[in-house]
Length: 159
Image (cartoon, rainbow, N blue to C red; front, side):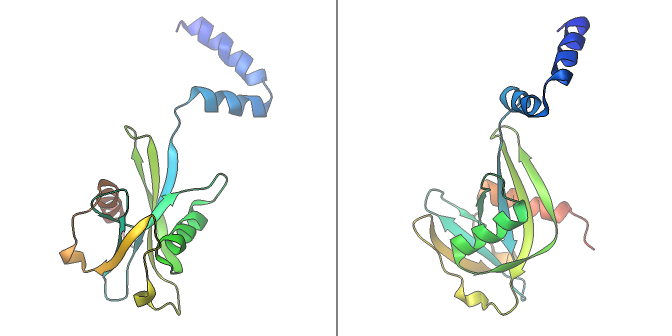
């Protein structure tokens, strides 16, 4: 696009009401789904994995955010919906962007909430067909999203 035309379009855009500018950006920009992934760790280091009815390998509890929902709230909601336990989020999340799939995952490290018995985690059908605690050195085959979540958390500086 010629620079003069771009400059003129930006001037028009700047004069639009804020709501209309936001609508234009949403219409013209790429659309991504945003979800959460909860890497839930027990006190002994075991990780809680789920088998989703629509995927082959194991993954972590998580899912898409509802419109207007904060990521931390969505993470807690998804964990409760999928495995039936309340969780505490630990530290700041990592973010994984998958441009080809047009997906953004907010990845949280988590643990069972105070007073929650981790052995009470149960799959909530029909979406989750199994959930199980695994030692980090004996993980089953993971979904791509789950492997990406672990890698994102591993790159995050501890502290």
